[in-house]
Length: 204
Ligand SMILES: Cc1cc2nc3c(=O)[nH]c(=O)nc-3n(C[C@H](O)[C@H](O)[C@H](O)COP(=O)(O)O)c2cc1C
View 1 (tube, rainbow, N blue to C red):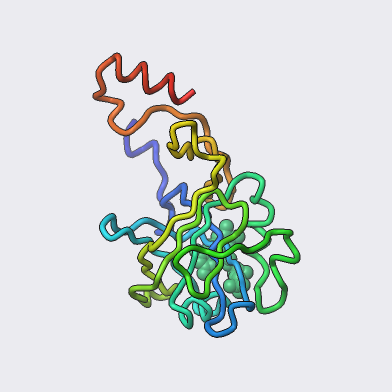
View 2: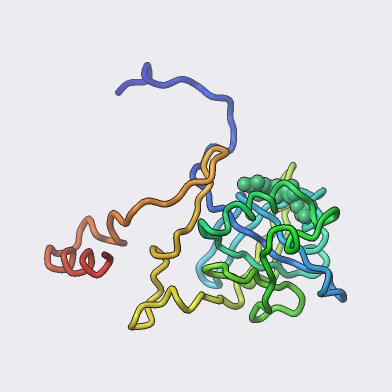
């Protein structure tokens, strides 16, 4: 292929796919006032300590809750939650009780004083805000992950997390997409043949 096989698009947020997550949060001092918001601008930003970023526009109801409480929970989402996830991304907690409207519910999140987790999420990351960076359209909240809750049915007999079985959903250029099947594992391109065979058969 050559440059002639490409057309130019205007500069845009074209790093796809992105995760799509439900961030749950609540009001400091009034933890019964809870909300969840769908975010696609979310990413891992550090390993030690483990940190993620979520970018939230100032006008979102969740923005004030996260800023005020200094906490948020990043909930990974699966195919069963996908319709509710979209709803939480097109309606504001200022106007509706998203839990009531979607049938989703909250459970306590380990390590959090205020923010809850979303029941049924495959994995929930409890985060404490470390830094807020105003970028323009969005404020980026950098959170340290202080606890991780994993749904028990995603552990295999040896206690290993099988996230590949979680039916996670990704977001790509305006569309929610299912993930396909496993192609390989970290380092598979250089793994010895017997390791490759064993690991790949374990992943079936
Ligand atoms: C797939 C999807 C991804 C979204 N990603 C973001 C995001 O990264 N940051 C943001 O501020 N809003 C994002 N939104 C919009 C908010 O989810 C939406 O405005 C929501 O209604 C805000 O809810 P709240 O007012 O209860 O906080 C996204 C919406 C959808 C559907």
